Length: 206
Image (cartoon, rainbow, N blue to C red; front, side, top):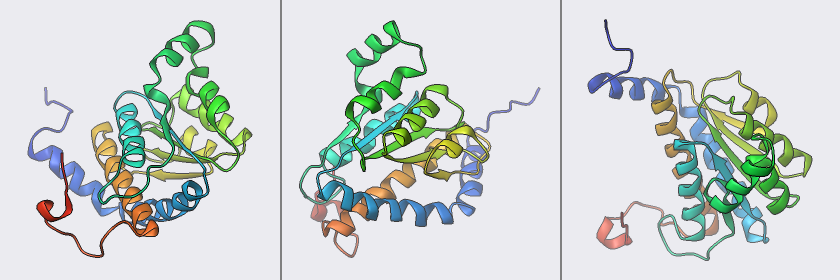
């Protein structure tokens, strides 16, 4: 029986194929970065959440904002709801599982803040519930998902949807989108040079 998971060169071929249709997502992620800059500069906050690998990417995003993406700039308020372990366990213990992130959105979110939600399937109930709570609280809800149609894309104000067959491919391009968002934000804030410099010159680190 042939294995259904793409391996080795097949994995790369899946990614290359998905990249061909990724161009609209590039423009959208860059625009999000520009708009997020104005939110953060006036004292707004970014909240982010996801499950599993998407939780790690949500934490990656908030770390880039509180720390820095590339060049030095002021830190900005960003909270990864997936990383709030005491809150997560308390909410799971006392409330339905759909409240896992939605209750945190209600606690931390303010009108005009940005809520970034990631789900490769776009069907995770706790992420969809967070989107609905965010919109009810007048946050700007941006979703990163796999192919349309899906409930999260429908629940969000805007969605960046990667057209790919496999979860891994979707996650890989979500990370590209997050880096484009961060670069667009830094460009808008005047923190990024116009041309790429060598790692030694730019202070790039792992």
